[in-house]
Length: 118
Image (cartoon, rainbow, N blue to C red; front, side):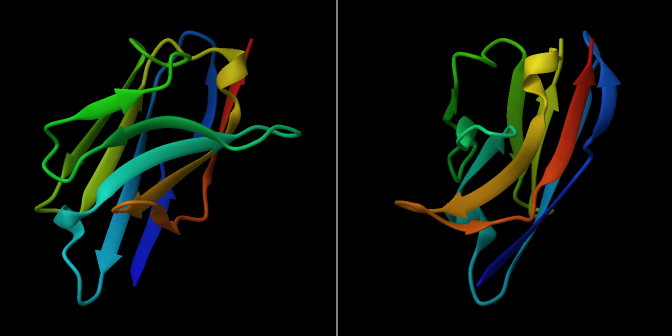
């Protein structure tokens, strides 16, 4: 079982920055073996993929909507994954979730709210 807890959300003005963190505990498993992803869900919309990072950190992928503004990173020694969000826009307002998995995302956090005011 992998337990994920997100933090770092909040209210920010458009153009501002936030850094989301995801703390992972993986009893009996190695956190570093999982691909980690960030997703978001805005009210009335489906959950949307934002970014992922492979177990080694050597490969990342981003949704077009955040490319160039968001950066995903991980620290396997600390069992942490981060999402640095810059140049935030009102349309980035959503609940942000981190997820872990190998072939599919099997584990999800409870989410953290990000609100961007115009």
